[in-house]
Length: 474
Image (cartoon, rainbow, N blue to C red; front, top):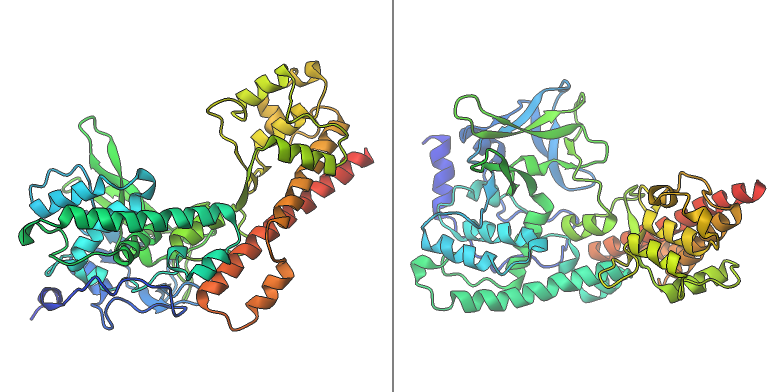
């Protein structure tokens, strides 16, 4: 029997219950859906894909299973290439007439755009339940559990200690519970042949497993061509490619190109630099905050340079922070008309204003917040109006107004940091001591996350305090 026929035989006879889907990760490296899944590299090759002869699947140190070079690979080498039929994707506007697909499209219409991973997750669940699925060799290699916060025990969700992330976790949990009810209602009276999940019950855990599988592994790439010649932006799961782990200093990159013969899109991974023997293949998942890495991927990156903390632009809070910083009579609660006009331009005042501001990341202090502090803490309307908004928003422009105004602005941010730290019920040293104990994997992730957030706040305070000292020396 040929390799391809053997793979398909396994696919046709394998039982795929959806009820075993994710609970909180009980081990650092979760097992795959089946104990002995098909050889994924062999399957990709059989289906017309390309895999470099020096690539193997191996257990990594940090992220579990990944791709590793078995010998040196030169820069520019093609590492993996997938023809158009291998990626798993779901277009909700598809014109397929199959009734089960129509039911899937109807379900997808209940999913908000911000949770796009759930839409593709529905397709993943359909293929997981379907006997004879083309993608079974891939799906069987997926992890059985995911370490994202929606599967944390309740105590470890609280252990995150960071309100914006807690809000997102609770929001996703509520959605999954509500979507389970919608799904049961929509599928209740369907004929067996029309059922998108082969008649199986799909609960919130199965939905959460599918959403997590997609959010942690899918890529948004070019899809089919529109009538005007442009290509749609489509989320897709890329078998084998999605086993490349993350680094902000990657050694590989994803490219798409048209195959000359049929003009179909090839998805390729190319070596961005020389890859040494035993080095893992690494992609950059994006310059994301720690919130998104944990929420979507289930890991925390220490000293993440793109991490930030969210604050609300609150006039009473800013008045309190400014007074703590030594400003005698701040007027954030009652700005002058000309100051209010500038705040409106910064979208920090008015009916549709966006009051979420950030500290950390590339800007250190979000430009809108910095400009607002400089403007409100200055009484010199003429001096302020000599500068454009971009200048007032830039921390690299040192003291565009008076030095005393700049010192007050930076000290106010430091005071905001002190207030933000005070909202965490534990200190960094306490968290580090807890980490040294024998804690569960989910508790460890929660501790790592909140240490990262607190360390970021401390780093911002140190940076701004140095800037204040330099300004005072002048």
